[in-house]
Image (tube, rainbow, N blue to C red; front, side, top):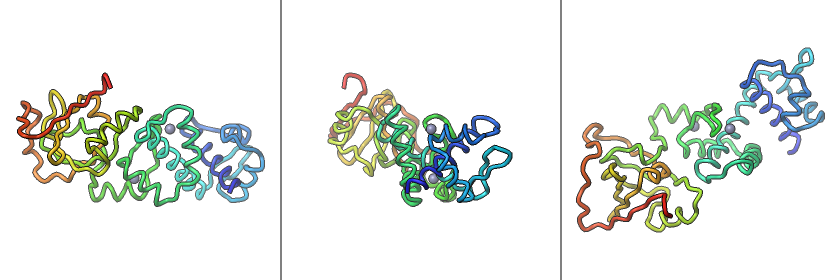
Length: 246
Ligand SMILES: [Zn+2]
Ligand SMILES: [Zn+2]
C-alpha cells in the first residue's frame, strides 16, 4: 500500500529529526526529509498518527509507537545488510528503506535475535527495543559476538560470517564453517584455533573478528584457561585462515 508507506516515511522523518535536535518541525521540512508529497501528509493526519499544531508536526501517542516500530525495522535492516551481507553505502540505504516497509513483526524479531539484539545501527543511532529484546535479557539468551571475544575452552555455534569477499566465505564454508555449526575454542593466541568435530581451523585476529558466534550457555565459568601456549594438534587437521593474501 503506497499510502501506508508514505505515512511511515513521515513518521520516520519526524522521529529521526527529533533525535537530531529540538523542533519545530514545519510540514515542508518533514515532507522534504520524508521525500513524500502533500497527499501523504493528508493521509498521515487523517490516520491520527501525526498531528499539526501551530504549523508544526508532531507525533500522536499512537504515532510515537508506530514511528518506533518503523525506525526499529529500518535500523535492524541496516544492521543485517551491514553485518551479515556486507552491503555498504547507498545500496545499503536504499535496500533498508525498502525492507523496512515489508518486515512482519515476527521476522523483525528473528532478525533482531540473529543479530544479538543490537542497541545501535551502523551509524550509531539507537534501535528502539522490541519484545524479543526484553525476553532475550530475561532468559539471558546468548548474544551474537565476534569469535575473537571468546576465551580458550569456551563453546559456541556459528551465527554468520561477515565478509565482503565471497571467495573467502565459500572457502570457510567448504571447511564446515556454516551457520549453526558448534565449535570449541582451543587457543586464542597467537592465532584463534577452534575445533569443529575432527577438524581444527586457525584464524588470524582479523578473521576471528569477522566470524560471529552465539556463545553456548556457560557451565563452568572461570575454569577455562586464558590463552596459553598452543595445544598439540594431535592427529587432527588444522587449516589456517588469514584475511591478508586471500
Ligand atoms: Zn542507521
Ligand atoms: Zn531483540
